[in-house]
Length: 95
Image 1 (cartoon, one colour):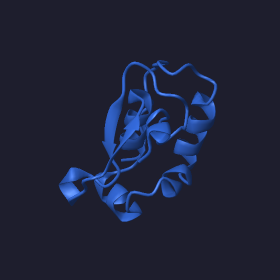
Image 2 (cartoon, rainbow, N blue to C red; image 1 turned 45 degrees about the vertical axis):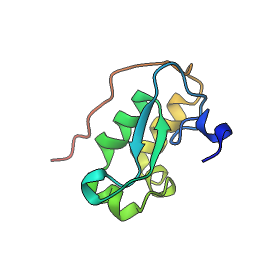
Image 3 (cartoon, one colour; image 1 turned 60 degrees about the vertical axis):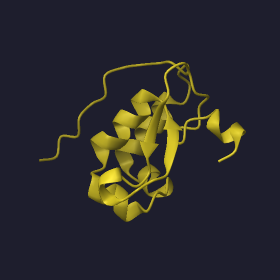
Image 4 (cartoon, rainbow, N blue to C red; image 1 turned 180 degrees about the vertical axis):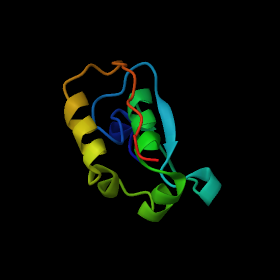
């Protein structure tokens, strides 16, 4: 990954702020090694809406996450927020 890409969140593409987390695109529990920089709120959103098994099946691709309706709504909603914006993340209501 280039330095320019490191300056933006992998999920929402907004500039990163002071707090950066590293997301395993394929979970470590599923033998994933690659990590990408994300905002804490974006990281939480990923894990609220996708299980480790689903993330593994996505193979580290961003597109399938954005195809999930709730993730797409989140990315649209957060698009104009400042880099260090934080708000509680709504939990997925599925059982």
